[in-house]
Amino acid sequence: MPHVKANGIQIEYDAFGDSSFPALLLIAGNGAQTIFWDAEFCESLAKTGLYVIRFDNRDAGLSTKFGKAGIPDFMAAVRSAMAGKPVESPYSLDDMADDAVGLLTALGLEKAHICGASMGGMIAQIIAYRHPKHVLSLISIMSTTGNPALPQGKPETIAAVLAPAPEEREAYVEHNLNVWRKIWSPGFPFEEERARTFIENSYDRSYYPQGAIRQNIAIIACGDRRPLLSTVQVPTLVIHGADDPLIPVEGGKDTARVVPGASLLIINGMGHDMPKGVWTEMINAISKHAVQAHGQNK
Image 1 (cartoon, one colour):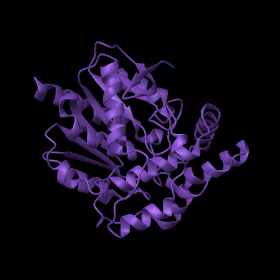
Image 2 (cartoon, helix red, strand yellow):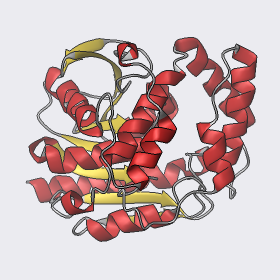
Image 3 (cartoon, one colour):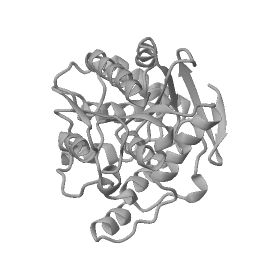
Image 4 (cartoon, helix red, strand yellow):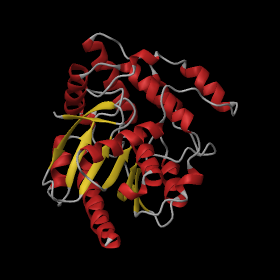
């Protein structure tokens, strides 16, 4: 995969489709690498007339790591947030949003449809209000607003996601298969072979669990984005699973409620993942949204 220098770091990326088409930037979630966005999914999006770009966030995959910042005390950050105190973070989600826009600029792209999942959805939201001139539209998937009054995920799911990942490869794979089962869409068969291959490829490409901790601290430090989300003026599509056990569907509903004119697609049976059974519906929705946004941007 190629890389660029942007916002003071190196960013690894790749792209699908014709570069003359409108760009769609895909932003992965906490600890996830660019390969979170399955190549087949990206190719299908590209066939709808989009130039699809996926990349490694900072502290993940092959992009710049922030190991010199050390490993923050996660529970201390949680306690500070719960007490209404500032949370110290090696970097912010704003910094990660600036990374993404820097990538677009380095690629010579003035604007793009910005699409993120989970933490990536939070980063996409920030780009929409922090860098609106670079945004054709916003697509926020299985994400939320930071509203502290919203329901939290299932305790057993949160515990599985936050549990330390083993260092040994096979133990790591089995650990993350358990995580996948916890977040999986109950309305669709569990894709064990796909999950195992993805986890193995992720481990072999870049085993770096400490990056996910620093990204998590950035999420906690970000706080409530509703006041700024209410200023977003770009066409917005919110996609959320009705059965998400990690970020409950109320997070998607809140996002759609706060962003002016946002559309909301709730997918029954979908959890905090993207099973192949939802791809067609998601791709059609994103493609239709991009076409409509293009008309509004003329």
